[in-house]
Length: 67
Image (tube, rainbow, N blue to C red; front, side):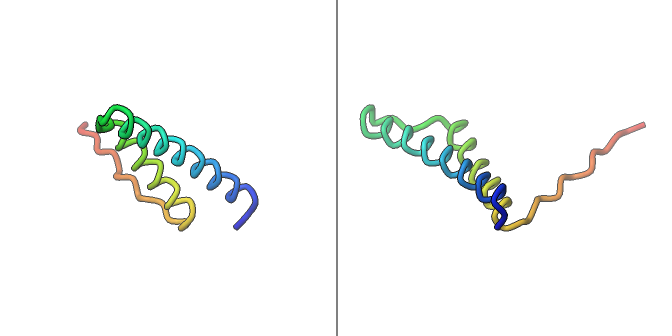
């Protein structure tokens, strides 16, 4: 793995770890569940990390325009 890719992976992991720590603290202190948007954000970050590590990218659908 190249150095820049490794640094990018480390950056993604740091962000994800911090977000999960924040959610864990919220659950322990307030006994509240995180917002769905927060969960979706972390899931998207995990997905981006997986794509970066595996070298696979999702194909984006072609935009369809009605003329």
